[in-house]
Image (cartoon, rainbow, N blue to C red; front, side, top):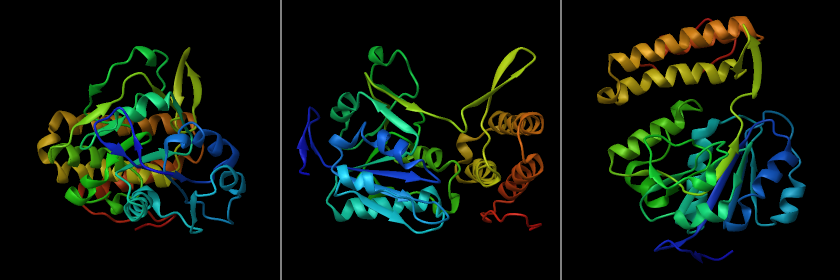
Length: 289
């Protein structure tokens, strides 16, 4: 594919990296169709820890797709950083990060809003997307966010010691502190599932249940607190109290509504402790350390 001139003041050559884990490949391929036409370089990084998945149907409709399968889970940040290197090698101007379960609605409206130096995201699960206006945001969902490649030369890539949890928030804060502006695009949305998408009824109220695994809960808990150390001016006492009460609420929900309760609560507590100690110790399953 060649560089395209859009309504934006610059030509855009877009690389998109989709990071997958135990995917239903046909579902992922269907999601990729929603943004493939305007993607110049398509990268699928499969973090599945078993035999290789079958991506034959993807390479049939996108013969130029770059599919990488290592047979192990290297996390989101490492995969994104490898995507940055691939995009740079292909002369891309921008990189978009996508989750396996995200589908764009009206990507043709999103694409022309990509600019030279701004970070562009998209509103998630909005029925009123056609009325949305482009606006500045404090945080963007990692899936569906486009970064200028020049930004990575300036502030570096994603924090690989974060592995998966809060990788997007850390990058958003670091970018904003270095003068980059974050925007949500107008006139489009993205269908995106958070966690398992399961709901449970408690006392007549429907409650969202994420069903995240212990690894995800560990890094999410640890990395939220590590950001207190990295960005102390952005984390006052009220922010910290809100986080701690949020962790307590999450553990109660897990104990009441989820399976594998012990491992999940233990992962949250371990991650919180290591975060408070400002340690980036990686997650290890079923260990006392």
